[in-house]
Amino acid sequence: MAGYEPKIIGFLCNWCSYAGADLAGATRLKYPPNLKIIRVPCSGRVAPELVIRAFKEGADGVMVLGCHIGDCHYATGNHRTARRMPVLRALLEFTGIEPERFLVKWVSSSEGELFAQTVREFTEQVRALPPLRDRLK
Image 1 (cartoon, rainbow, N blue to C red):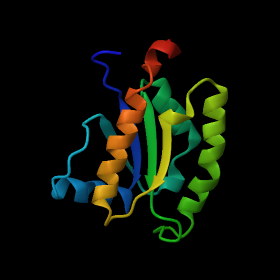
Image 2 (cartoon, helix red, strand yellow):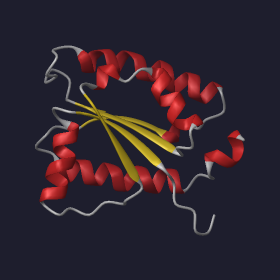
Image 3 (cartoon, rainbow, N blue to C red):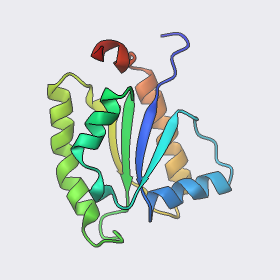
Image 4 (cartoon, rainbow, N blue to C red):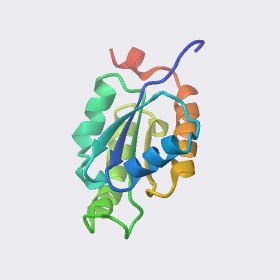
């Protein structure tokens, strides 16, 4: 669709992924402005209801970024994320939301380039899909 810019919501854990985003900004790495960041204490605190609400409120894509497995500030929060989000992905697919609109990834505080690359790739992936808000009305 010409002129379509997807709205992407990113739930980023405070200790790793948010710090990785901060590093990307501090080192002036380029990534699309489509991402609206929501800083959360831990990726394990991102309830499936929050992701569903983001889609319902107009997001075309949702990212949940957390610490690498074994590096969680809260010990096992990212393990919880790793268990819950695949189930959520299946639920989203069942409801007609393409699984390509949802991303879970581990990005540490020292991985600013990985953060920027992830945002670039995910934005392109979502941009290739039609706007979700038109279908959910």
